Image (tube, rainbow, N blue to C red; front, side, top):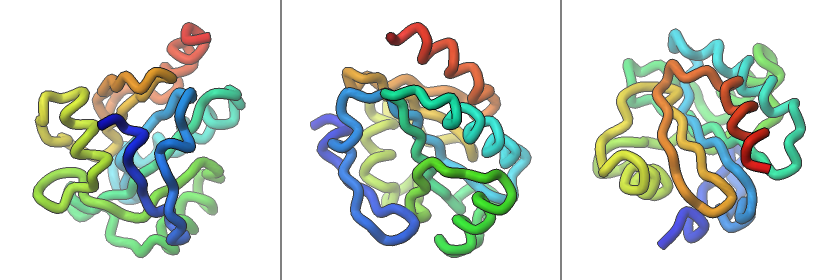
Length: 153
């Protein structure tokens, strides 16, 4: 199995296949609206606005860390749009750890973290064009991906 065998629901309830992201670099981030790292939405959107033709960001809101994402999918979308102008894809809220962890996160953790749990909000997984997965800690500045993306051309 690869990341491209999985699907997720976006925050409008549409089913999205990860195969739609094949041959692209994808940044997957578990997010929360009431976290000390929430301001990273601004940097993520700034990164998104760089308009790399082969790059996508997907936010997966999660309420597993300090109950810092209590809102509904609609409330999360409104928060992201009105406070940070987010235009990248936002998934429906998921669990990233435990038995009910979303299958995409189970895959990401097996591919990049030796099945270790996600530690906190805004942990990042970079999936390169070949499907290779690299994990980055929550404090890793999203704008550092500009250099990574420039080097991947």
